[in-house]
Each structure stands twice: as C-alpha cells, then as structure tokens.
Length: 153
Image (cartoon, rainbow, N blue to C red; front, side, top):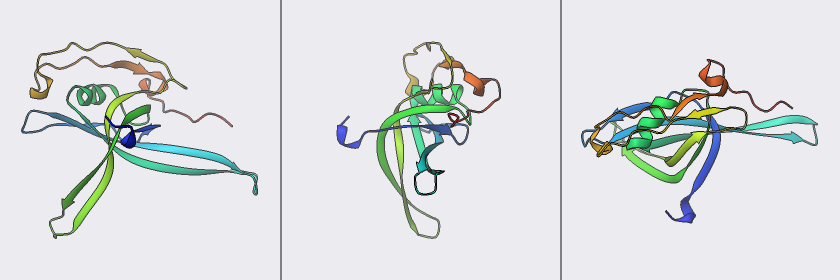
C-alpha cells in the first residue's frame, strides 16, 4: 500500500454496517463515519464545529467482523485508502464519489473499553464458508445502548 493514498479517520458510525454477499462469494460491508472537529473561535470566544462524513467499504473477513461487532454511534478508528467509484444512473447521468476502502477498523478506546476475541479462521472466507465470532464483544457505553459523548469542554 502506497503512502500517497493512505487515510486514517476517527469518528462515530452514522449507521449500522450493512453486509452483503456478492455473486462472486466475496463479502462486502458498508457504513458511514462522521468526523467532528471543534475549535474555539478566538474572535467570538465560542466553540465552532465542522463535521465531515465518509462512506467506508470493507471486504471479506474484515467486513464480517465489522458487521457483527459495530453499531451506529460507536466511535471507531478506520485506516485505509481513498477510492473513487463511478457509475451511471438510470437516467444516464454520470455520478462518482470518493470513499474509504478500509484495511483496518477498530474501536476508539479514548472514551470506551472493548473486549476483543479472536475469530476462527476458515480456509476460504471469500467464498463465505464459516462465520466468525464477534471481534468485539462490547464497546463501552455503545454496547449497553448508550451513545458516545464527545470529550466535555
């Protein structure tokens, strides 16, 4: 993986991961991450905020672990590379978007705790054989139904 197209973001899941098995047998999971940036505006002496939204894709074993382990609101660390995807709508309009193709996804432990369990490795995940156990049994408040709160100011 080249260093010129590498990205790491830390943010909260905007939706539960959606898992699909493609005709090829590969597993795909997609989810969204919101990254908040807050700073003190020195001229107004008030907090300003900017939110960036990223769509994330994961494949095969990572996709299965993400879909089994993560839910909306959890704070995660996502590392991967940017990829542009293009398609044409039914009306013939060309569309494209940039998304993160994840190589690694994990819980942020800044304000939460996680319990990690290893998955059983099957011989051929790409073909969908064998279902892994959850990679994270619980992640802080999100596992008990609460969301994650930003650091208090």
